[in-house]
Length: 314
Image (tube, rainbow, N blue to C red; front, side):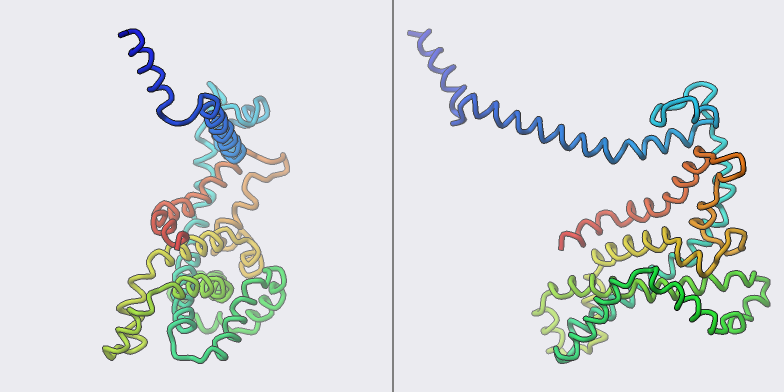
């Protein structure tokens, strides 16, 4: 009797879940395939990064004498490539920060202002729609289409004379290109910033805005006291996107700064020629330089990652 009870109890515990053994095996098999697929995708994206990273720690003979993804061992390991790359890219890091940070912040603020005007202002819809259409159209203008007009535009602007007071302080006049890059990236980034902020402000509580209006708050006060404090997640999205785009841009840099020998040469311009010589390509040096160039964008993402996820979710 006791044996039967134990047997029944064992059967009940195995089937209480309501799913037969075959179904459980099918679910487990699906999960295994899912995890294998995810691991495969992870490996697909991580192997090139791992290969570049280990290559940056190899000597020249280590690069040619081993597989790309094999880590350096013994005499093939060196930190010299990183030191050389940092020495070469140091001034480029500063120059890139001089225009990437102001251009990112200014374009984000102007995009927020414009989006607020397109969503919360008292404009009639027939006026808002054409303005919004212009912003949307601005997103789809490729960089290559504006390179010649951009060069001609800045050649007509007497920026060298306008900034003469800076050159009098001993600043190299090559830094005219930095100011040109700031204005160019602000103008080119404003459409996408405006559209992103507009989608965020469209979902903002209208009752809260209307209550502030009934209390007599002006449109500027509503923005300063209500809209701006609530815009943190979308500012994180825009700042990460804009900073990454501006930091990595090479086309505008080639047009406005032109040469890596310039005192104002950004990091991407110097990186383009790093490790290139008559003897061939120094792949380890180029990989070290690429990772150094990527560190600021990685730092920005880490700093605003949580707010970025919240902004994307909304």
